[in-house]
Amino acid sequence: MESEVNDDRIQAFTQEIGELKLRGGRGDRERILLVIGVIALVAGVVLAVLGGFQASGTTDLGDQVAFLATGTFIGLALVVLGTALFIRYSVARFMRFWLVRLVHEHRSETDRVVAALKEVEEKLGR
Amino acid sequence: MTEPILELRNIRAGYGAIEVLHDLSFAVGRGQVVVLLGPNGAGKSTAIKVVSGLLRPNSGQLIVAGRDVTGARPDALARAGLCTIPEGRGIFPNLTVRENLVMATFTGFKLADVEERAYSRFPRLSERRNQLAGTMSGGEQQMLSLARALATEPAILLLDELSMGLAPKIVAELYEQVASIADDGVSVLVVEQFARTVLGVADWAVVLAHGTVQAAGPASEIGEDVLAGAYLGSSPT
Ligand SMILES: Nc1ncnc2c1ncn2[C@@H]1O[C@H](COP(=O)(O)OP(=O)(O)OP(=O)(O)O)[C@@H](O)[C@H]1O
Ligand SMILES: [Mg+2]
Image (cartoon, rainbow over all chains, first blue to last red; front, side):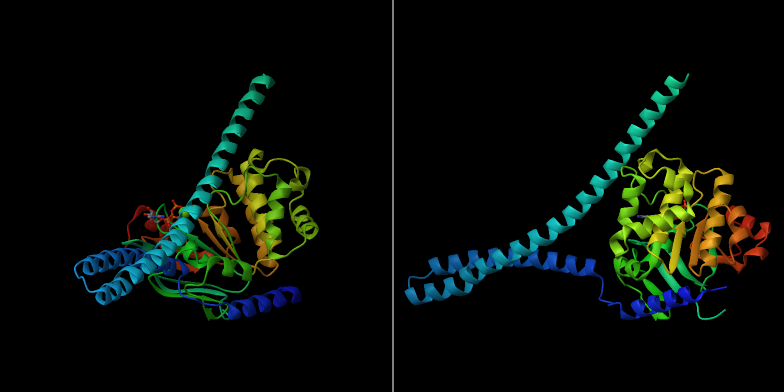
């Protein structure tokens, strides 16, 4: 019963399935990066504040520079990195949600218009 | 049965902490129509989500064309030729019939070919090509979702409750089309709540209740007693 054409289709399908890349869940990776972003942000702030306190706790210029370098600068770098990750992945999540929401609303709006039109049609018909 | 084109092996899946499918296994052979029957909340749509890649199972394997594709992305599976018509409506009601068909050209088919294929199978759509899809009757809307699905030349077609809210006569008509699609070599997995019409076109039936297989067998041999047992909840376990 199966024609040649469909044998070809099945073969193409089998090949495409065979070539599928099976990367682990992308959703999970996104979540992990989001969490890493938050951790980097918090750790950065803590480091920066600590570095600041340590630097102000000593009068030795060399020590101050060292404290600032390990604390404040690395901290600031972490803050920037963390913020970037956080914004990138939380906005992606939000945008996706927003898009679905938009499609959904559009649909229900159409439904309402259609229902209203039907009512009008019925009334005119009578 | 030759090597199945689609197989679920010991699938466990659910939402968050709630497991809906417990150890679900069944297979669809090449060119077969398999129907998944079961009462509300049995987990039929959840099974469809697992097959289409939308829901990642907690354990178990999804085998497609002989390959373990558990965890593959739904868009990749769809592009390869595993096509889903979801529960409710798989169309854009605020677009015209033709614009809906344009949406099927994403896989690289020409609009002219897509239209030709859709209108030759469903002439009624041709008359309504410029009508807003949402203003068509429920049956016509399902025809459109079938037409759009077929336009992408799927190898496997997943249908979730095609009959929802439709008159029995329309449902019978739609299933005649499904049968002819299967005759063309497309393997079809159908989900239905009510058995009568669909058992006539299906080769194999799987009765699902509480997330596991209650009974399975050739569609012609699934008796009223088996269905009643599953639907009324008199499960042996
Ligand atoms: N997104 C979700 N989040 C949480 N629970 C869900 C979700 N979708 C479904 N469920 C639950 O999973 C169970 C199975 O749902 P499913 O939609 O698979 O049933 P079904 O067999 O398709 O039923 P129906 O015939 O009504 O369509 C139900 O108890 C339902 O409440
Ligand atoms: Mg369902």
